[in-house]
Every structure is written in C-alpha cells, then in structure tokens.
Length: 295
Image (cartoon, rainbow, N blue to C red; front, side):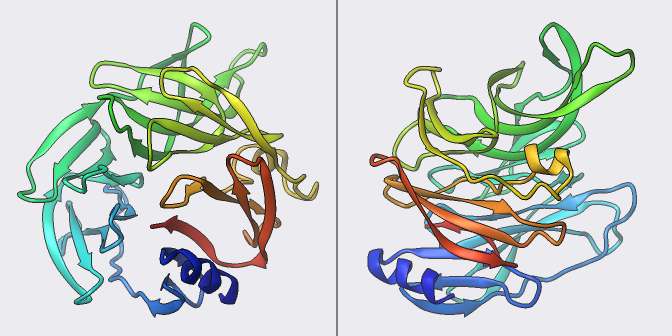
C-alpha cells in the first residue's frame, strides 16, 4: 500500500485494486475504500463485469436484477459514493470497458459484443466474436477482456482460444489478441493481458518470455522487457496463459505494470516497466491484491 501511495503521490494519479479483505483506490497518496453491492447470479444468466471510467471518477459494474432473470449496469460515482442504474441488459459475461471519451461501455453477452451509451442507456452491436477461425480451423474459447481503440472502429479483445492440435478431438488453450468488428474477428498476435495505450493505438501484451508492443495496424512491433520466470509448481496452463495479469498503462503512456501469479492462491508480484527505457522493477511482492487500473 505504501508503494502504491508513493507512486500516485508522485504523479497525482489514481491506482485501483481489489483484494480478499480490502478493495478500493489510492488517489494522490490517500487510500479510499470501495464496497460495491453484490447479488447472487442465476445459473443460466451471467451478470459479471467491473470497469473504471477513463477519467477515474466512476466505476461501472453489473448485477443481476431482483428477479435474477436479467442484468443491470450500475454506475458508482466515487465523489458521492452513490449508484445510478444505467441500463437493463440480457446478460454480461465479464469483459467490460469504457470508451476513451467515457460515452459508451462495451460488454459481451451470448449474442455478441455491444456498446451501451452512458448518457441514455441505448445500445448498439459493435462486435461478433464466434465462430473464429485460427490457422484455417474453427476455434472455440472465452473472452477475457475488451478495450477500445482511439482512431479505429474495431475493438481490441483478449481471448483464450482452444486451438486444435494434431491429435483428434484435442485442442490447447492459447492466449490470442483479437481485432473485433461487427462482422468479423481476426487474430492480431498471440499473447495475453493486452491493453491500449492512453496516448495512441499502441497495444502492449505479454508472451511467455517478454512484454511487447505493437501498433493496431500491425506495424512497429518490438520487445520492451523480459518477464520473470513463474514458479514451476503452477500447472502449465496457468503458467503459460493465466499466469500474468492484464497490462495497465500509466496515465501518460510512458510506463506500465503487469503481475505474475506465484501460486494457486493467486498471490502475485507486480512489476513497473519503463516503456522507452525498456527496464522493469518489482513494486509489489507476494501480494494478494489485484491491481487493476491506473488513472
């Protein structure tokens, strides 16, 4: 906590985190607790998702309706600590992302990817994810995150896709970074934890060996820094695909952090990366906190 406070005090930023016993945010060095309402889901209706607005003033989160037949998107105003109901939707499978002007929220339900206006609750279809072809074969998988591009109409998505192997009826879960449009989804790169820079359409993502960046038009791909080896006691799937957190960019786009999962309890180390200098340093060790956003 003291390390995160020092970071935010230095650049007057805000860092958001979740934990087993404590959740909230640190703004300009001061801790603010955050407790969001919880409701039990119905088995056949997914109502999940949580995202911090780009300006850091609101948090969107999804709950089941009282009858648990549908979902509702709520907006928490951090200044007043009050909730406003934005829209009722059929379902939300988890990924949730604010547009860069905070005017829309993207989410996924069973029928595709949609954007809902944060002003009037109107929604529009913005993406089709499945079926997806990888190496000429139809692949299945699950969407882990969504992000908006600055100047392009597509959305960025991270998915764990079960890629067919040479053995019949067998596939292997692999992280893919996708460009998603209303009509199609295409693979940009293999990797996990992808996120868009707040400055331009530059994407940072993690491979089993390093942190890389690439422009949305597939140019200027380069390696930034290596990632530490993760404990061999973690199962191979977790080590290769879910052993890292999503990348979080600094507000100025000059730094980013990522976390490595250390054990099956999801305790983690977090590393701060200088994007231009290509250096990293550990800022949190063996923490149970999930550090999610930097504003």
